[in-house]
Length: 439
Image 1 (cartoon, rainbow, N blue to C red):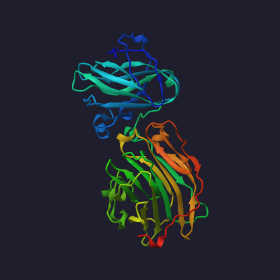
Image 2: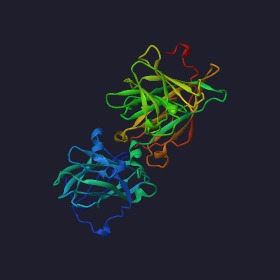
Image 3: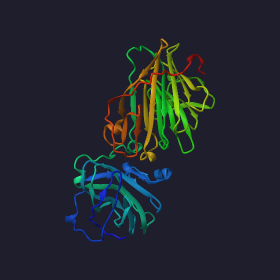
């Protein structure tokens, strides 16, 4: 393996989802021979530490990669290329003092690059042949250093034929960009239904798709949401929340007359308040649900006395013999039946935004106030601002194997059109629920 100076001009056939290799043959390249690198991919919004979720937050900030001391740390910086042809690549980086040698790898091909500038500056890495458009990453690890840290990396610099068109990457709002795009399915209620009292849904999370930070929201409605989460490697939750009519991100500021009231809760369920993305009443049950199992979610909403609407959530699955009560809340200044039945998939942990998650959402039904069940087989697929402004393109949803599904994060290349309509096959078997016997 060669120790390199400024430039190596190489041509590497890149595979889709590969990681970009840094190369140099030790020859000096005159400044007028260095290709133009006019696309700046910020490390602060597009970098993840491989294999160590907790440590990533210590080394990656909005300014980029810093405090990097360990040889075992490997970083991947992602971007999506629109075209084939030659890709020119560089690093906008510096060392604290002395010099550092970094190893950059693409599909098992490794080369070394030397950094010795103590100010942020561009170092040309090399040229590569891109055979397919799509997501790529440059993978970087440290070999040696003369200072306490290997380097501070601010940007990856890109140019060449493969960048002709729009190169996709996170260029602003790095927190949301690193969380990844959130996706939603809004279900169409049959026209025969006047008022909806119950909303039933099912979720199956395939094995390996249960990444930390995932929220598989099953039963969303106009005033809240209900679903399952992966909170850590050892903890999972069933979460049910209702927003206050008072608009704030600080639950302590909600006036008493606008607070969500707890009516009752299930055994082992924790209740309290939540904030940051709206505020209101929250309940969760720490339960280690299992991938591959299909879980049932049932939500009831009904207007009650004194200007309140009461919302109640139940959870069921193959491990149980009966429905489990999560909680029942009353929302003030609200008189409504259930509205806007929907589901979503989101990642709430920035350090797992490079990991794919997926779930199947199936067998959606509503029960009208007349006691009749109606199946919902149509849904509109939508996404959040991170997807709509094309900071991230790794999102998908629709129908697969007869079921609705949603998928996000992980830098896969298939993307579903936002606001597209999807229809699944009807199952025709209404939920086996005796609502008079619910706990």
